[in-house]
Length: 128
Image (cartoon, rainbow, N blue to C red; front, side):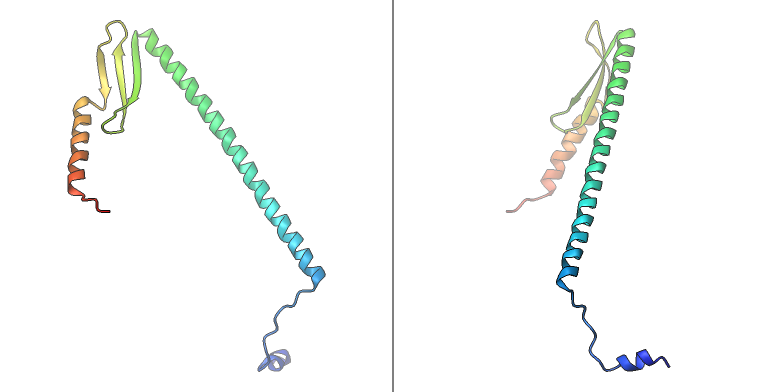
């Protein structure tokens, strides 16, 4: 049997006591760790901003390309949010006449979604 184990049985568990000079060193180490984490967070935020800017540029480039394409075939594309359903709506329009060629989602689907939203509101009773 190990003598160190026998000697520790029945004794109080030793609690670490920090010397003042060690406490300040530990505080400095902790502060350095916090600074490192903060620096990593700033770097990650900067990278995220760079990625967002690159994404935004790709979207702008794609939008320019789509606009050029639609101009070449004499069509327009319009985006808006339907007020009743808060859904995105895309319309392809004949540039000369202004006639809607295609709408996604269709008016019928938007009306159905609005009615379903109203009906679900009747099923739920709000109490304050």
